Length: 395
Image (cartoon, rainbow, N blue to C red; front, top):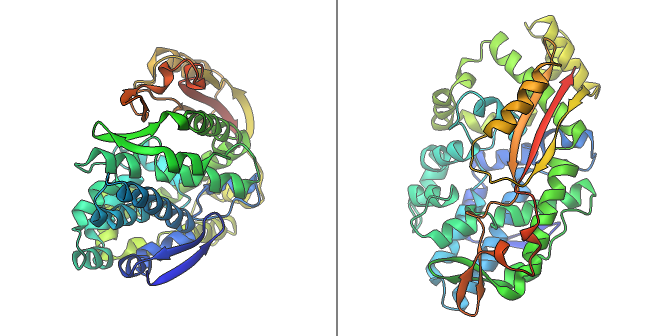
């Protein structure tokens, strides 16, 4: 290891020469200027941590878990750093304000995710691809693993699965910075009981209570932080401001996936961050940009922390199967909310998966892999499958 960075969760995080070179690239340093929780700081003042620290934490956990599996002969020694590097780069494609601006693109292009942009950065950013090309790993191999498409299912599950290093880090990190207690999980128990069986990542049965707590923490964090009523209102407001500014300022490259990919290949993506977005919002609020009066008004509301008013809320838990489509019940909820909407109102109808049986790690019970929600001593039998968020706000 060539460098050490002190992390508030994990203590000293050590980096190899390759990892240090990746961290030093301009596009990775950009993550210091991208908030992990978007507008959550307007409800929880401490929530100003970044994708940079989270990425280091995910890398550290990947190293801990893969290192232990390697010592047990379940993962080749040479692949431990590959897993660390993929975890390090897994969030490199997040747009400014993370998931808020990502939603602007996902509503228009279903493939416009931070994973898609991350893939393009790993294989197409001049600096990152140069560093990886001089390493034992190809940019494409790292990119496939970072987005969960690696040929080795165990590796994909560890970096981009349901019980992955991404979630293990962000639940603890987000809980720490918001000050809520709901995201606390038994990390050590999970790390020590993850194993490999039947060609996939699994959990020894003695870790089932820790797995239960992981999903309970996730459920509570969706309620208390990720879909907090005030935070959701500000995020919808921020998305509307961004939409208006992209149109009114003629920011054509920011309107399409192709434009964003061109920014990646030219190196411009490294400057597209929260600082850039908040500067535009400040300029708009002060009348220094050629934008409409509505954009100026909304920008002023955001800067003054004037929360949109919640006028309807039909959010609820659902115990029905989550199959990726909203379903008739959700469309009925959307229809009811549209009845109270006025022009300019902000509406959100999202189905947030909580327990997805097809994605969950199996439990190793006496050398047999078992679905955890079928175990009589697991709380997962009783947990809702999803959280349906359905709200209307008025700015």
